[in-house]
Amino acid sequence: MTQHTQASGGPARCGDGTADGARVAVVTGAGSGIGRAVAHALTAAGWHVALAGRRADALAETAAGADRPGSPAALTVPTDVTRPGDVDTLFAAVHDRFGRLDLLFNNAGTFGPPVALDALSYDDWRTVVDTNLTGAFLCAQAAFRAMRAQDPQGGRIINNGSLSAHVPRPQSLAYTATKHAMTGLTKSLSLEGRPYRIACGQLDIGNAATEMTGRMRTGILQADGRTAPEPVMDAADVARTVVHMASLPLEANVQFATVMATNMPYIGRG
Image (cartoon, helix red, strand yellow):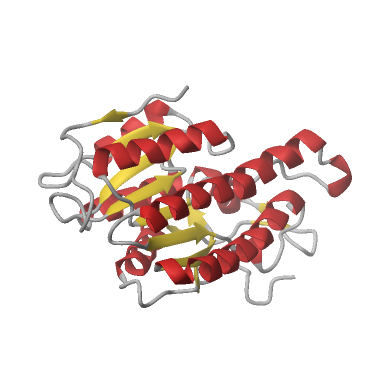
């Protein structure tokens, strides 16, 4: 059973935004990397943010970093997105605290081990699929239900895709398959959300400097068999893009966007 904590304040009224007029976001994978950067950027922009991730201590660090004078306090909900019960608990906590949901940044994910196809174990395949795809589906489904039922109706879902939603890296079959599937999830959510003012877009990210991309700076396998370092960009640049997408009125949507380190080998990869 997951536990959730809140830094301050009581439940907000349901209806036209929260009691203080701020919009409400859920960020998954918020304990580090892109999720942490996005949570901080949304908080700085005046959003109420619910932080979801597997490690309570990491979520607490993210919440502490987002604590600025005048900023709304973050809600932290330790969550394993592969577990339906955890996801239900997350969105129930958001409803109890804020009364509505305006944004889901569907960010939780894992690369899996960098191994050749014939060395990829079933368990490793399932871990990547369950986290990157099933977890994204479960969170999107719960967000969709909340956004459809609330008054005013509607909201936005932004999926963290990847350049691997378009082209693979060597030894990344499970990750690449799930990111291609994320594109289908994004398109279907966009279609399903039309009658309910639920917009869905996808941000395809390339080489943001995080704990997960450390090997890109020291050397990573290329399509021609070489191992070479690659340029990276600040995760804050990704966060600014998410805030822009989230700030649009629901009548406008960034369906797909790419933000990447300028000189990384994507255009012309292979």
